[in-house]
Amino acid sequence: MSEPASDSGYSIVVTTTSSDDNARLIAERLLSDKLAACVQLQRIESLYVWEDRLRDEPEIEIRAKIKSADYADVEQAIRMVHVYEVPEIVRIAIAEGHGPYLRWISDVTR
Image (cartoon, rainbow, N blue to C red; front, side, top):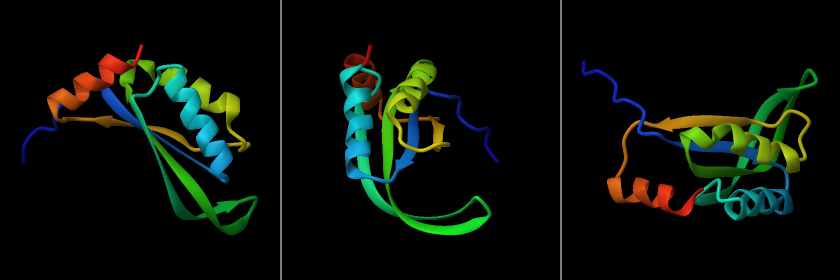
């Protein structure tokens, strides 16, 4: 088994929300603040436990491509406009990626 690749310095941040309006607000905030190079929105179905009840809800998944060093600012920007009491905000490190794409992330973010 080979050793895992080191972190490239780039990440994908994932969050979900309940409405198109809130998803677009989050995406536009990250892009206008130059915290993300690209934000993808996708309709999903989420099953989870909240307040001791099983929930089954439609949601919008938001995936933002960022520089890992900007994660704290990205999380803060999302939290400022997110409608959930306890939003999912997770960072997934990109171990490797297409060099020109990763450089583009750096070029269009602060």
